[in-house]
Amino acid sequence: MDDSEAPEILLTNDDGIGSAGIGALHDALDEIGNVTVVAPADDQSAVGRAMSTEVGIEEHERGYAIAGTPSDCVVAGLEAIGPYPDLVVSGCNRGANLGEYVLGRSGTVSAAVEAAFFGIPSIAVSLYVPTGDMEFHEIETDREDYAEAVRATEYLVEHATDAGVFEQADYLNVNAPLPGDEPAPMTVTRPSHVYDMDATHNGDTITLHDRIWDRMAEGDIEDPEGTDRRAVVDGRVSVSPLTAPHTTEHHEALDEIVESYPDR
Figure 1 (spheres, rainbow, N blue to C red):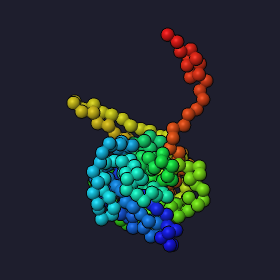
Figure 2: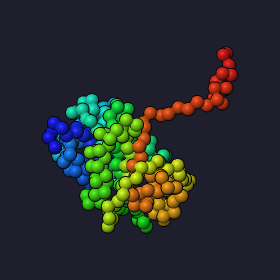
Figure 3: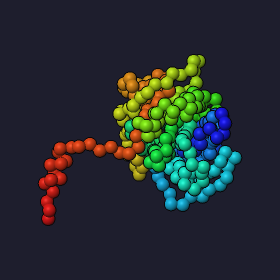
Figure 4: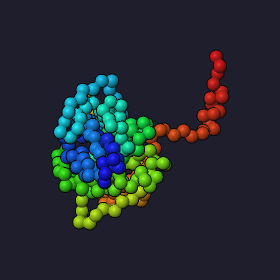
């Protein structure tokens, strides 16, 4: 592909610019587009759409390291660094971002949402890493683990825009399994509604616990067919087409109480 025809891609993440996931994506996307990396200098997992007013910037062998959040990186990349991209890709995250409740919490997804508010098509990409009996922080990944996530991202970058996908979706939330004996199929999904957080009071501390990960490790998930979590646990690449602005619905009950609001 001629450089003049290649898409301009802004690549970011929330695991930090030195992570294996962004390295794997960078090398693959660099073959099909002009990639500019603007990513956090260190791990910014689960910061959501937190935004700074001023951030430091340093050149890095992969691009630009920002002392800030994924959303900071998108704004900095679009408005201060350039070139202005045709597409923003966020990832690949070490750990899945599945379910409605995660969308606002994930730094990976939040970078895609930030781009969507600028009107730039975006793709958030994450890797499902089964924990088994281990704690998540004990699990390490290397470049080969991201093969399915990279393959899916390359395909979507090459085909989604021309196919008109972003005429209806603002961004895609992609979750891929680890590589298996056969290539993983891809399926369109919706975010799961299942939510299972709990908290335990221990003296002067409270421990917050996302029990969804325990369920996934045990294979005990109630997510139905068609949801993102079910697809990934079953070994498929999940692609959820999503919109960024919050939607509003007409509620007659709210109309009634607003009409009754006292004027003094």
